[in-house]
Length: 411
Image (cartoon, rainbow, N blue to C red):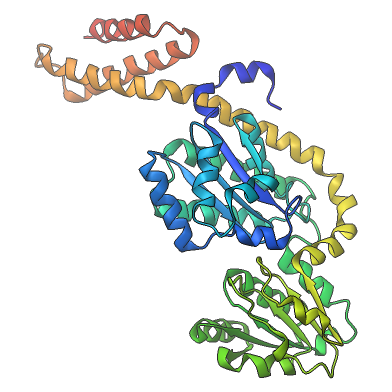
């Protein structure tokens, strides 16, 4: 919590409109989370509808562990409606599992998400990159205003400071690496034949971790767009497999890692012969491995929630000890943000009166000994005094009059 005196300083009219609505691994399983995952096309529809509602800043975080929509809105239910109108899940289903926050609660949640304090694997630093990617996508649709931009940037700074100043992210730091750590426990893991299906950003992280931590494993890649798999294979020294040959590739693999995030199952029972032991890691949300695959003899399927739970016990106690340090860092950056927000409410007034002072300088008699640079300096000085006075005296009308007097007295 921000100290009470600090709460009194902030512009509550602005901060109270900052909202988040979301579901995550804590209450919703992979099937439910998958119903509310957001593709780029759906993101574009959310942005379009938000603009029609005159919302200036909205972004969506959609990962394997969570789907959250953030924005400045009159009520958080506006964000709920935006999300559920474009996803496969219903509004009622979302509300059954959702958390709805606004004001300081929403701000606190954002900082905890950015720092990995709200992740399924405590301290998962991969979420910061996912958060940035989500904000950048919103910005590409012109849905990040100046206040939201500053809001998320303070959260980024806090996350980076926690990364460097604490041990919160030591050891296993992401689901993609957790999967590799699980594989390393297999007998002769470095001699396994591993197939990675899906070579987007997440799949690419998996492949790079495989090459770094299991360099002798035989790794092959497959993707619906063959060129994408081929490019990653060239960069990582692996083998690309055409998607139409995926069934045979699965049969030959000892380990299959699925990172496709498709709306339908990409790995089905017919891909397996059931005559050898195989491990299937489904890192997709929604799950992309047909549940019937679990019934095949000698084929073991582990989904993203099970992987996270397996690794969690090994790292939780050590990381939990670092949480108080992380909370102190978060408090510092939240306080800095609130200080900025307190002063931001004056910025538009200051700009308006700065413009008026420039107008005033143009209608005043111009003396030959006065260069334009001198006029500029006088306006800047008067505006600086106005800014200082506004911070210490709330009577804006008087301060604006004083600013004009200051300027006139300098002539």
